[in-house]
Length: 492
Image (cartoon, rainbow, N blue to C red; front, side):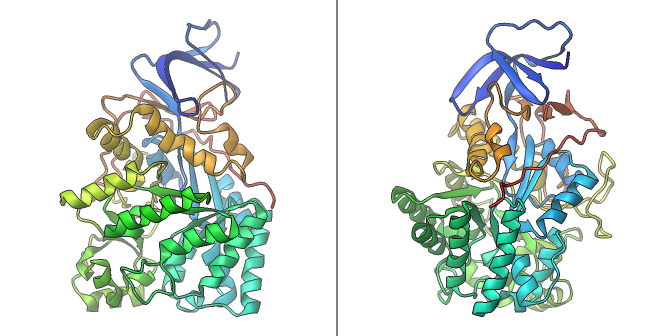
């Protein structure tokens, strides 16, 4: 009999806000039952999880990890499904085919890429179905301009075809083309609304940071949601809002009170990561955001940019090179409090913005484990979920365990319910749910990744199952486990 029993753990179901000591029975990739009385174990694989917490695996809505190496780091952070919804990939069929051919440790999925659609039409850049292809656009000003009516129709048509092919909504990197006509963003929102899809937006600059912006980035999203009725997701509110977080959250409060379908995510770091050629990292744009060239550190080499001359040089020669950006000072009590407020905001979803793992020769994947020496990435790739829970449950007492799983599992799944049938059986723990589960030691769960050691895995994930298959068992990775399955949207 193909049964696995997780025996005697503290079972968390965020859908019903319950916490019960129970046996969880898994069969054929699903949760067969959750029983508060011991179930017969004849012929079953029994795993004693007494004293541990059992809950639905974390769903990362914002991960640019498209590799086995990166997914293994995220597995140790409790993630069972990783989705690239902010940037997306194009063409979507190729993105899913490439992932399936390589094998995936975690479940995976992608939105339609607004940036690559615009790049194809406005700059003649062929989409590559890779995050590197998107990052390579950052230094190309042609795709950042406003569109003619014909061009707008053409790239909207590309996005519409991607939705029809199963994309999980539309990923909009508006912050990377922030001088484009706001009417185009409304057109994207109208397309999403008509297709019953969501948008996932890296908003353009706030008016406090750039008074010359065509429209305030936070207000633009709120207005588009109100005018079109589209479901609109605000990506990493901590990094785009910086020290103006309270005003942005107040805007979101107003939108929700008015009935708009607006969701929001955050991560618990004061340091971001992106391609160094990004619009907002131009030397002349740093000071209004409270940044200097030395706020930027290059991935891999660890070079902290010395001055404006060096920044211009790197942006010109290698705009896709990944860098870190220190947008808040985590040594400051006031800045740490901003990060806490972003996490504590009602219904704020935890999402990592995980970055590719990279070696000095620009490789971005490896099947070796432990990872070969020299691997570099942002620490959030390996530590976002454990760090969020450590801070909010153990240190600050602002969440209980039910709330932690609601923020990390339940809410992200519900954002995608209308688009992706596969998500409707994820994010909760009851009979019929997918057997995407994490078993945590509540006393030892913590992040370990740092700038000096960014691929040091989190502690405390004792077991992790994807579709009922153990990826991590007794704290050890199964290097032969590739149970990840695609999460696709319904044709629109």
